[in-house]
Length: 323
Image (cartoon, rainbow, N blue to C red):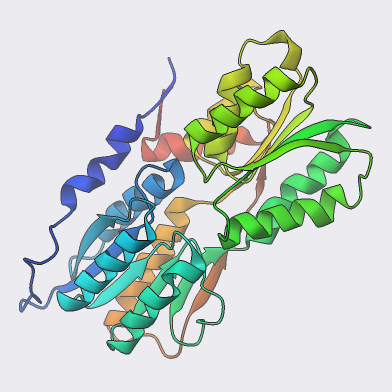
């Protein structure tokens, strides 16, 4: 029997969290790393935080504290400020919103502490902060190019966006516009909403759409978590047995949905690769092996039914899928 390890298990990383305000700089040669996740409630953010925890085990000279930003910009600012006060040697932020976290990362820079952003770059800060990311336009584009040929003539689609102002959501949506909608004027958008990367919000919007429309040919989602929420609504509904669903991230849940034939494609944003590069970079910065500022993008390959076995194998290897 196959199953996805529940998010609660993936969030065991939370047990390593330390209450900020009680720590001081260690004097045993071990350097302290703060990693502020945007929210543990999002499947990809949880996967990334878990991967950071796993990768940190390779560095006995680093002590990593993982904090949950709870998807709240003010709380993320508070965590950053406390990390500065508590004299962490390096502060890594997974931004919830590029512009909202710009002042926070600038505070890190102003304090003379190395700053790294992961999974979302803050435009214009590449010369003062390191970053590890993927190209969000290409993440959307690989799906849009496939959808160009798959979505039927005169088709009807719905669109699920991430948070307003979030660069990854904006750029993925721009890719769909340029690579698909501008080239397929025959396609009608029945509904488009900001579901904020959230499964439950996506379900609510999808429930409204299926009640209002007898025909929906495709769900265009800017991440897998929202795509999975939409799929849950139409699961078993014969009217939507041929529904095309596109996402981004390559989560374990998406891999199994593609294998099951319920999801069409995803763009693989490898959280383990992001974590591996981020922790290597943090170690290199703290050991003096980096000159200048490093800004790295990982690849974003398209995953479909034809190659989903590779994604499943990757998740089996990490324990995210158990078979």
